[in-house]
Length: 168
Image (spheres, rainbow, N blue to C red):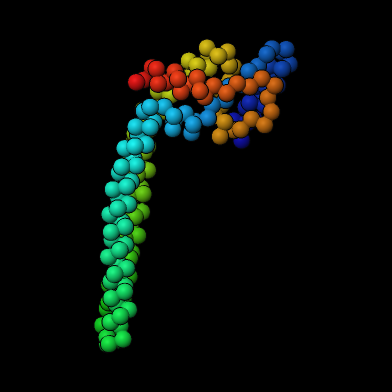
């Protein structure tokens, strides 16, 4: 909301001064998924995710097998044995849920760690491309979508090209 108000304020200031005000727009999601380094990071993260997911899937299958075995044997088990086996199954399910959450957190941390330097370099490239494109203000299209502006330029494709050229 602050970004939008800033755009409106700046636009009104430039409009009253009779100057041509050009708003640049970038689609960060498109840029990050299109640049070569972004693709490489996504591949690294996907490999790590697939490895973790395979491990989780294997443990899920083991738990399902234990549940099926428990259901088949429960008719001949004593109440105490049923309770013990039931608690053991619950503990394994909770451990798997905790492991899944820990893996999700690990993937998020990995993504942040790998993307931080790219985003820093991307800021420099966006500044350079914005200046060369004659843009007065550049905003991220997803964060503060422009409803209307007399002069707008989407410079996303130029940013992708410039980034890939500068950072191979």
